[in-house]
Image (cartoon, rainbow, N blue to C red; front, side, top):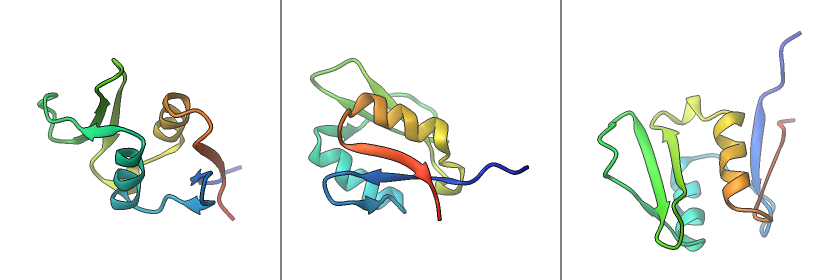
Length: 86
């Protein structure tokens, strides 16, 4: 059996995160900033000045899977939810 594709929902609006441009806007509103110090050009990275946390995502959105989604959920409690796509 093939597992269902997951989607990440931004809870305050109920919006499904469907692109990195959308996700970046949301993360910036939550205090995250793009981080360019990692040196890995295959990753998009975000950091928060108030934290040691770093969010690292594959540059290609088609590779954005539940592992990355849950990392964002854990680092932003009460803002995101991961569910099966319909």
